[in-house]
Image 1: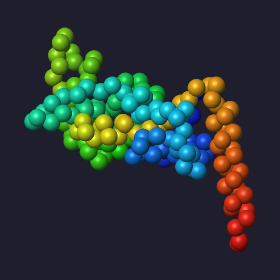
Image 2: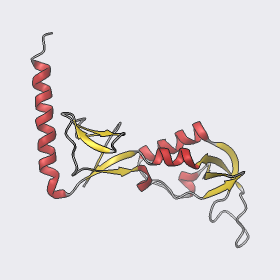
Image 3: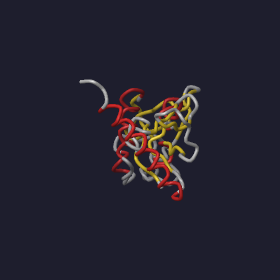
Length: 159
């Protein structure tokens, strides 16, 4: 089972992703080994990589969403747009099916080159969590118990 997360949290913020240990932790600090990360790689388009001037780049055509009929998660689309804005170098790129001659692999469409290091760093971030369906009720119960504790803490504070 998978649940969309935002800002590396899940279960309404009760569970957070720890970048350092690459684990999920409840807000009380306990690690949750039953929850696994779904990385952006899992749903990103499979763009071609090229090496130019001893550096490897990911080729992203300008109209990649239309060209590939891509209907993936919006968070992935936004991530790719940000990569193009921050790291993209305008270039002609190759796109499968864009040539008129058989076996013509020349770069002929407008696009961007994204350094492979930037692509990998962005795509290694979790955007979703998964867990075994048998664990779902226990995980939800733990999240509710933490949120109830949070609500009690907030209501007992002086205003």
